Length: 326
Figure 1 (tube, rainbow, N blue to C red):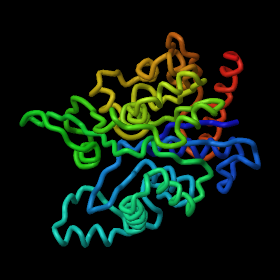
Figure 2 (cartoon, helix red, strand yellow):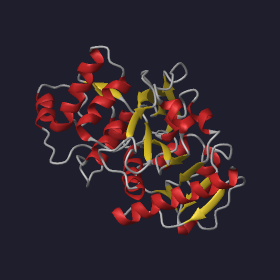
Figure 3 (cartoon, rainbow, N blue to C red):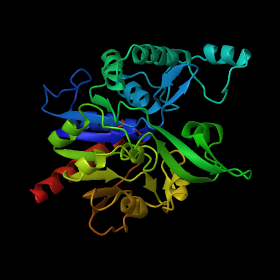
């Protein structure tokens, strides 16, 4: 089975780990030669930012580290056994911003990426090279090789202004009222090489419990990606349980675009033209969405076993609906 997963953030990365396990994919077998199963991840790059001369791709790195065994499990982002000497030295020099914490091990990844980009290699090629070290067991593609950055229109009492998503998310903890999210550069961006082919060749598409506005949503701002998925069986996992985000501050993002923080509202936002199936938590078992098959099961990814079971439920539903549609 060939599965495409548009993903970003911690929830997406952890779901992918469970999906690998349920499909029996070995970390060194991204092409699925031994099992016949393969996963292509379309990674969100809307969170990307350039700081201190380095191009930082948080969501690509979180997927790569999580599946490659290098993630800080407690935080869910950054490297394990991390130190922050470089961050402390930059602060001592008065370098800004001070709110973005680059770890020493993580910085090495950004240096390699920055050097390759400066040498003219596209982000997709750079990502493939970085994955050669980590062997994540999936094919990890950025959504685009073009520079796309999510900016947030905020109102802080002194008028409206635009700030980078990372500043809104990390520095302000999403506390500044957001009026709009803008994917700067998205309108003219093209899907990265391999993205549309992977979707066309996929048996099913699975949306993990990623932020629907600035993770999965950012991927869909690149023209052609969402449209290509309309031809496929698509099953999603709700990032909302009982009216609250499982992790992070997705509620602040949903509120900014006028979407209620609920499993039903997120499914309606994604659209019945895209979604064929939707997994919600048992607490939301009464959810119904017109045009979408809704099933309930435990969604908390509290350990490897529950995460694998959730991934299995998503695959099973996708296979069932795909069979019904053929």
